[in-house]
Image 1 (cartoon, rainbow, N blue to C red):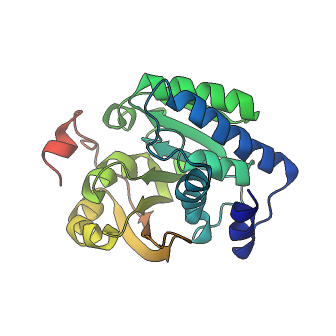
Image 2 (cartoon, rainbow, N blue to C red; image 1 turned 180 degrees about the vertical axis):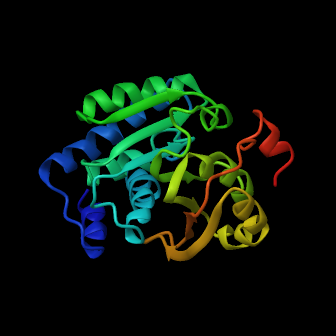
Length: 235
């Protein structure tokens, strides 16, 4: 925890006591549930704090989460990046959509144990969720972390972002290469590349890319396509 706190403080954020306890509880529940369902291959404490918690928070190094905004996390898995962001910025309204109900059950217990409010959890495919009029083009921020290649992710995520909203993709070392393959998809879906930020995770020194894409115009109604189509036939 001290190692994690020091890293966060270097970026200008200070964890209060409530946030410290929430991260500790998050780690405990993650490991407990990982024995029942496969949530993560990383189970050592420093690894979880660095490669999951800190890595999730890198989005906040390049985008201001201090206002009261709505965030949708697509394919959040065990809650990354949205739950660490929610702990650090408790005022944001978070929606999580994931295709595996077991993960949603974990997130329901996690949300309750952490005492998080303004949380909505949905068991659904990104393709059908993005066509739902309740959710389509209604979020200030849409996030996704290591779910699929960027041209596929863009079809999952950009339909959910409101005009003037932003899609933040948290990618590995090949993120910039994926951008070059995705510019057409981003444009077709109503987005425009804003910026690409490279950081190196402390200690292990692996590279991460945080990609910000602005939503400039409405996504054509036919996107996202039927479940499976974005992966089989990427834009």
